[in-house]
Amino acid sequence: MKKKEVLVLEELLGSNKKIASEIREKLEKKGILTINLLGSPGAGKTSLLESIAEKLKPDYKMAVIEGDIETERDAERIRAKGISAWQIITGGACHLEAKMVGKIFPKIPTDLDFLFIENVGNLVCPASYDLGENIRCVLLSIPEGDDKPKKYPKAFTTSDCLVITKSDLLPALPFNLEHAQKEALQINPKLEIITTSAFKDSGINELIEYFLSALHKLRQKNA
Amino acid sequence: MHELSIVASLFEILEEKAKENKAKKIISVKLKVGALSGVVPEFLETAFNIYKKDTIAAESKLEIEEVPLKVRCQRCGAEMVKDDYVFICEKCDSRELETLSGTELLLEKAEMEV
Image (cartoon, rainbow over all chains, first blue to last red; front, side, top):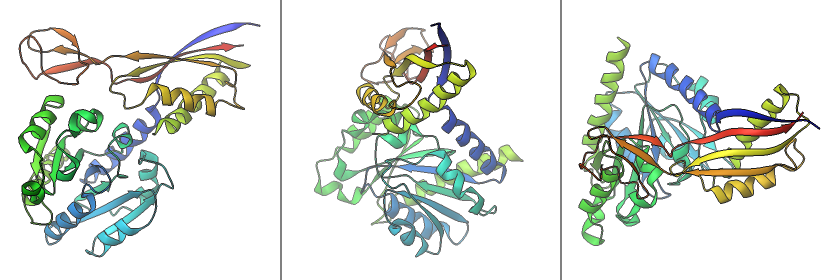
């Protein structure tokens, strides 16, 4: 019996990263800005997308990929706004992977401005998977509590933007906005923080401005 | 709990490496798991032991090296381990920190019977 030690030094998620990079490159070439939305179940991801859709629809073309363990419900909510949406049903898996987005890829119209990917509701696992996005947004809703950034560091350190949702509930709940913002910036000093309420239409315009500025930069790079 | 899906990716690499090296079986597997890798080493081990049955690594042992989050300050050059994930320099308060290690999820090496 002969033993051999093989040095591998390969990233376990290397194949996901490779597929994600290919997706990003193809979408960027078409001038499409891709945004991956992460957040707990009930953080308000779909409601935020509904609000964004209402405002973007007159001037921009967007589409949505929905990730859920079961049901088409979220995609149906988006379609009701007149927006193309594809549902990925993971059948139990707690996150989306780049290869799942890759399967939808041929259906994505080439004249889009924005592609939103709503990840499976979960603040842990989706953080490990690059889906080919340009911007990763993590949502934190007021009812979840202001202590989440340090409890779920990976979701916050890998994100570009923190969207605090349901700000209309601030008067009713002991959520310290300043504390949440400070903690989030401690673990990720580059994080853009935008406080929103889809229900009261607050902060949504600011978030859209942030996306538009990123879209503009992406297209300048292409030109 | 995405450890099982990560272990599935690990076995894809292991099987490819075993083939390349014409290995009869895999004896041991060594992983490096960073504090900010997003996976729990204990769950990874459990998933590995479930997954390995009926594979070329069925009798293999898994070793996991846990790597702390280590950063370097780009302003003053101080290096430090961050157990609290606070990206602020303890010496000069700068927020410009470069991550040196602690985000990896790596198959470092495998011992094979050839």
